[in-house]
Length: 297
Image (cartoon, rainbow, N blue to C red; front, side):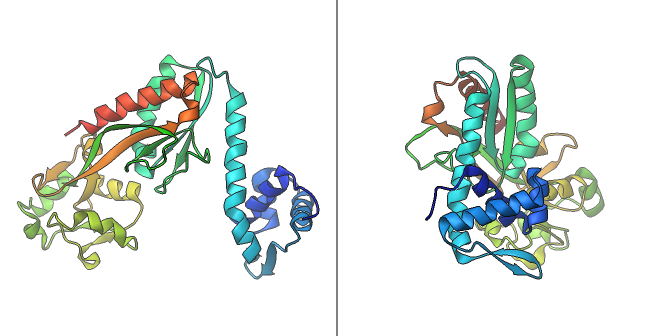
């Protein structure tokens, strides 16, 4: 290594990896293409490794580049966390809080909760990192996370708020057209909404009597938000969070005694943030609101 690369060089490198071209990365970062190309060249010189090769599809990361990506992402998360740290006053309720959650929780559950919090704390702003992959709070990819699993890292403040329950649901209009099955065994001939390629999602149903065969599904999709919307639009019978099914349009629950899948739910944050007033008030608010959501039956 000839010299220590600047953070801007790593940021440009990550943008090229994500967008597959200098032009796409330059647009994303608001830089000129020559500037971005220079950053990549300087990073290659500093590291003594070629990071990209040209292909008909654009720029492909080399093996050294692939090994560099997770480290660069850690740097990006740390840089973003540093920006949030100086964005507001740790002793007052001002500044930005970054919250990680699953697609469904982040898109359909959290917005109302954060709206209510901002109504009483207008100095707060929020960033939502939505993914079904768990964010790493130790690397500061987010400040607070809503997780459907018990946190394993010891350096976290974690509170179990209850269990989000999954059940089988259908829109009343669908049931009016096709009839209401009494048991999972009665689903033959019904339109079922299920997975496409993510067959791991079937594991939670293996003791419910709900059909597990991908071929049984009339509508196959892996996006969970689209799955819920398909149920709401009356396309068929599918799996939905009980709390979401209670909202308009209200869905009808089926086989409540057979299809009841609990998702243990935790609100977590890094222990270093417990003294930050904006983080603490957001954490406490989400604990209360998520606990209330878990109690919906």
